[in-house]
Length: 382
Image (cartoon, rainbow, N blue to C red):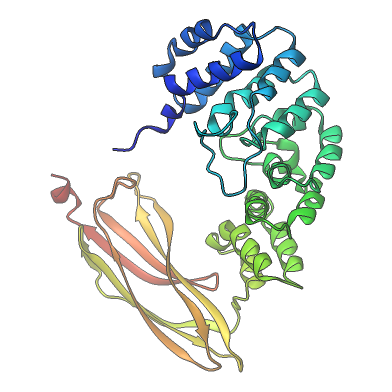
């Protein structure tokens, strides 16, 4: 069984951090720091462990924020290469990877009153472990100053720094502080993304795609418009970025986004569709078939999904979209597609007996196929 992720911050890692700090600062009490850091550590998860270590650093490093930062920065390794894993390596000189996460949290917790010094420190730290979480309160408080600086960083020689520009400004970064100003006005960040969309590294371009996907949760039309503009003169890299950026819009059958990706909802249509059974035993397979047609005089891309409307405890139906098939239909072509779906026990869903419904999504347009009765759930549960 794999070791829990939180064990990246274990006694060995803490001892390594203490040793590195003692090497660059003769007044650092390594033994005392280790005792303090280990106290209560086992009860904490990964992020809580990092904040705990940041607070221990506060207690054991000089009180002067600028001096404490210089000490932490002096322990860092050379910047990570793009293909390095974010884990510390005992063979390398200096600290990098997850073991430096408490350093960025130190800046987050104690550096908000010193914008310039903290931003400078995070620029260095992000080249060893991303400062995408720590930078967000600074962007929120010092938006104008931060955006000016991030515009410069978008052209930095380090891909880690360039990625921080996109990742740090994501409006809905998972596990990070939501940037409400950018949720409401995402156009503020678009100039940064324009600078980074053709970046030489996939590492940065992937962040740009994720940033756009964040925006699409609140402004789907805007993201479709941006992606459509970017595809006017596309490269292979741009096409990949756009597909990843539009994934939430596609899942939501957002027609402008599907049009950007070449899925025509006007000429590709469902001709017919049937359910195999109107009564399905829990633990068996739901079968169905659908016939689709391209009525245009040219080849057209299609994306065929299906929606299973699951019955909930209160009797209401909740939709869940599943992928089925995608490809290209020749001019005038008709295609028959057979699908099936296992309805069996899974850990992420509880099933309820009663009416369920099935529909298909063809290039974003929904066509109902009918309803079926799910039975045998209680027997299977027993």
